[in-house]
Length: 311
Image (cartoon, rainbow, N blue to C red; front, side, top):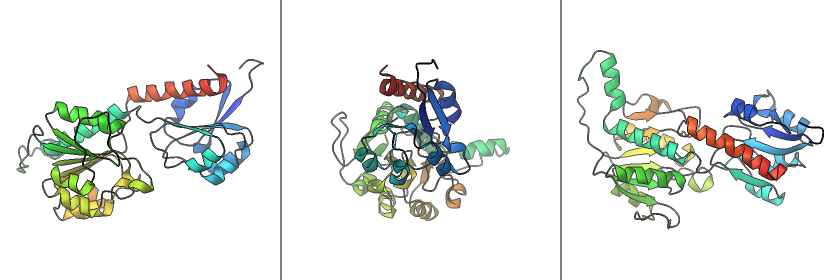
């Protein structure tokens, strides 16, 4: 920092990519690691008067109206992830604070993981892998099937849904989707009712954001419609799926299986999902690739410079 540069205080609220962000954000920015404090709110209060930006993620301190009230100089909120469910957008708007997210930056990565889950479920890859390691060659006799020629429904046609649809089509999978409004950028048919979509497909992919509008949108009725030959794959936000209903559907054989990268009460995972041999579970790693992280880090610095340094 030169003598002419004034320090710009940034509160970093979430642990995701914390070390990488710290290493990539140079002077005149000064990052305060709120996420690492035993009492994060006390650190917010201590630096609230000079904080001009927040960097947050879905796993960190929530940006509530009360938190914003302690940050009179705040100008910019950068959410490294795609969602805004941890930010009080109305409170930020009233205060004239700009909110930017990482929506779409890791869409390809999440779509690739969803495809991997589909293949793993269809071919029971995790089950037969365990059999081979335990020297039980060919022990699993459950029939498997090809994905080519199957039907897939995508709940949510944002960046992830669109990236996923392209990849499904390349596998000769028939694609349709559910969303509140038609998406002009895609040619796949839209089904305006999620239960109706579930009844038509072999795989139901959930790429929806979190929040009140999507909470438990995939419930018992959707799972029953998906049926005993259908699979659920959830890679959006865990709150979109009623996890208790999903466990019950698996235990009763009402659906064939499920792949989840996101969970309703992360990092807690329902025992019924863990104990099932018809689930594929990953710890919210859909966007966790070197390429996605590099894009996010570069854009974060670019956005800070554009806002504060007009560069």
